[in-house]
Image (cartoon, rainbow, N blue to C red; front, side, top):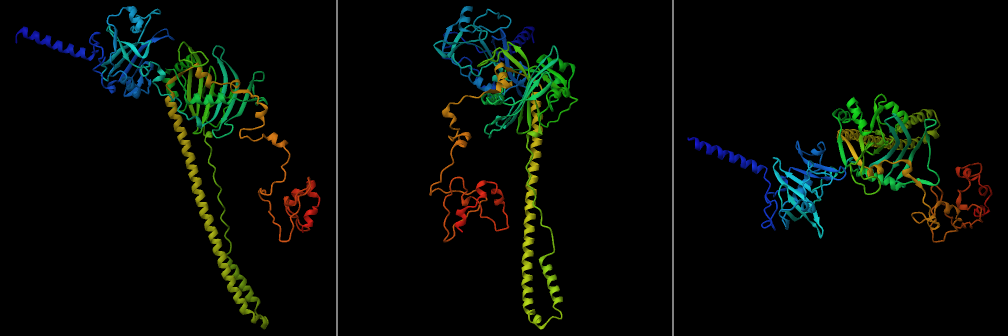
Length: 638
């Protein structure tokens, strides 16, 4: 083989390698304005399931700079690499985002070689962190999709919407000049962290809440001083009326350094609207960002919620607004509520802005501790608060068996005592009668036949009584067996609930262990409540409204003032009290007339007992003036 031929072969091989490399990083050309109208912008991208990652780069006004958000499959699990691989709910979301870009047709080409000012006007300037400055205008949103082999499927910059038709927007393929008009909704092409994660952070059912504990205090890290204000325990019953009730209300008295109980004033009531908003916020707890905890701290939180501290963990906690202290010292200030296990020699966490504890029917108690503020982190706020203020949130769970009611066991009936059978008693009586009859008169001998007949009847009666007693004993034993089985079933069911509750606490702490959560100021104000937030002045009712309750009946005070009801009509049926005797007039007996006002009606009490006797009814009525006077009407009817 000649040197020239070898050279050509090497050149050919090089071209093949370059062609393959070019294809791997290939971005489909947009063509020019003459041949792209009506054509698909990315004809090679036809299967949404090919997309294995999405990266969005855009300008963040809160950070005043460029931010990058990425979601991808990491170790076969959807994660967010731009946020320390926080778990993502992205499988369906990414497929929907990819679908919105498949078959994207070019409707118009407003500029084939735009100037920098035109790029800014269309909003398709490349978001480059190295070139973007505070005065850069018209920065677009860059969307890059790759497959599992990291090959680029789509790389496009989304610009402004058209003023006369918001369904249309300007786009530009990254690295190319032409600007196109396409019909595209970017709802699924979001770079917001909260849009790509599981929405149900706590995984709780708001109807299963049993109680909420509000620990209102602040901690000053500079002076290491804690400022307790109140401890409030609220009970919730989804079937109750009212559903919310105040179980404990303690105010801290700084002068005596002790807690003083207090209660609602006559003109105060619970603000149930605020408390219902708290329930809703817990059910739909929205986070705007996360921060990963150091490994040592994460490991200590992954099982039962206890804290194994080290210097790295302590420093990291303090940066987030949480401080470790002795559990014994903490619970001397804040007495624990419930029956959960507490290691007084262990470590407890104090938050810079207090905490709430939420008890559930399954025995799980959530602890939400509020840390320090992060400025300029965004998150948004629909109403109230500061949309640029976010806060650290530390979430753990613990098991409180007192939240699960113990089973109500049915008492066992007693088995009747075993005594001599009636037949044996009858037999002994017959023997005694036989001995006594020896040497009696002939008259006794004549009556022996009748005695034998009576003895036979007695034997039959004794056998019947014995059978009844045996049947009764068998029934009681059968009932005891049934009750014992039912009681054991309840015990087993209770133990299973305890087991499931403990397992759920471990599962939740495994989810919470790695992360500090970041919540918006709006969410913070809904779930971090104090007494002044949950207690309000009673609403003044109009006179017309005060005369009726919710079901239209007169209130209790009104009913007490109403005169006694008149004699009912003859057609009305009067129901006697439970336990009262109902007497009917005997044939030939007249019904007593209605007594005058202040006297007891004959039918209101039982008939007097016989002379020398007594009755409970007579004793109960003897103290009243009406009962002490004889009823002439009653005696006349006898």
